[in-house]
Amino acid sequence: MFKQSFLLISSDIISKIVLFLFQIVLARQLGPESFGTYAIVITFSAMFIVFSNYGLDVLVARDIANAKENSSKYLKNLLLLKIPISAITIFAMFAVAILSGYSSDVVIFMVFASISTISLSYNRLFFGFFRAYGILRYEAFITTVDRGVSSFLGIGLVVTGFGLMSIFFSASVISIGSAWISYYILKNQFISSPHHSFELQFVKKIAKEAAPLLLLAIFSVIYFQIDVIILSFMKGDEAVGLYSSVMRLLSLFQFIPGAVVGVLLPLMSQHFMNKDKRLVNSLRKGSLYMAILGISAASFIFLFANQLVEVFYSNKFLGAVPALKILILSLPFYLVNPILGNFLIACNSQKLPVFSVAITSLINIVFNIILIPKYSFTGAAVSKFISEIFLFLIQGYFSIALLSSIGIVGEKPLSLHFYQSVAKKETSL
Image (tube, rainbow, N blue to C red; front, side):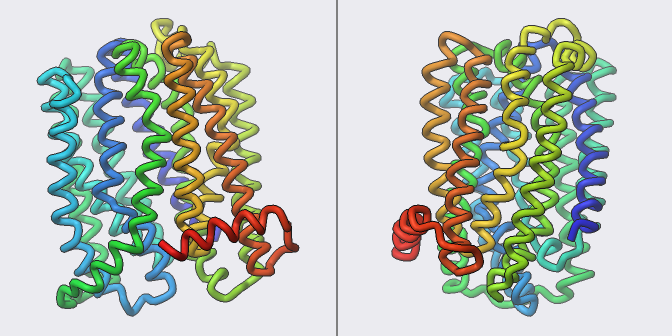
């Protein structure tokens, strides 16, 4: 398990470092305000990819892991399902950019970003199949090449004086090529003949099963991105640029739980189906390693926050140091939370993380609205910190209760009672 995780983590470390270097160069060249414009477009892309993705990659990784003979059927039908979903996503991104009152440049940037968004959603679908088969080297290779090429090309464009338009255009072209490579490998190495006929009832069933995962993704992206949007409307591009610069340091670690989950999700799903006590061991190890990494990294960054910001971004961004110190304290929770959420998904309780993230998103929005007007991006950092702790507590609560309900760990009466009340609502939906 951890050998596979190490492979994906290693590739992500390389590509993430390259991407981070590109963003540093971009920030230093553009300054806080123009970098804020870039961050706004990237934030909207991250928000809309959940609609295009529709949770299908997670569903595929879970279902195909237990029934690989259905791979062809899933691939053909899901590719057809994604066509209308992708069209709606592109239209929605374009409409939101116009209705939000952004400049014509931002609207054009958003059009190119929507192409990248759609291509990335297809890539994630194909990665779901790779993960179900337990073969992560293709995802590792494609992700590294995609991010590496787009980042190095972006650095070249910025240094030679080209603007944001060229960066978004080149990224869209590269993302299309990346998706085609993924499909070619999947078709030739795993599913030689994805020629199942279209089955409307099957597609409806998949759409219904994936709906909770879509809701989870929507609430997650609101939870992770709403601070930038609120900051944009309340304080402008410069505040967004400063806040986004230090958020990049936090998001450097995002790929690590993602890589671990890529291996753990199919494995935990199999253990749950078999009522195997190794389910607890998988959850415990994943959470423990993430917590140790989070505490170690957070301690280092907190102590050297001033130096890190000045070295990476220049003294123009030193005003963001207090926000960084607050944000980095949430890193242990930030790394453990994806493990807990995907554990619940693996145990066929996807509405529980939906409920958890929905409540957390509401809390995050409320705190952002209260704190940003007075404390700007530092208030956004406080909101993020509070939200990460709350999400950890509620998902941990549900995880223990779920294990109690299936008899793998001892019962916790209060937790079990509340879990069963939510689970009943889940099965009735």
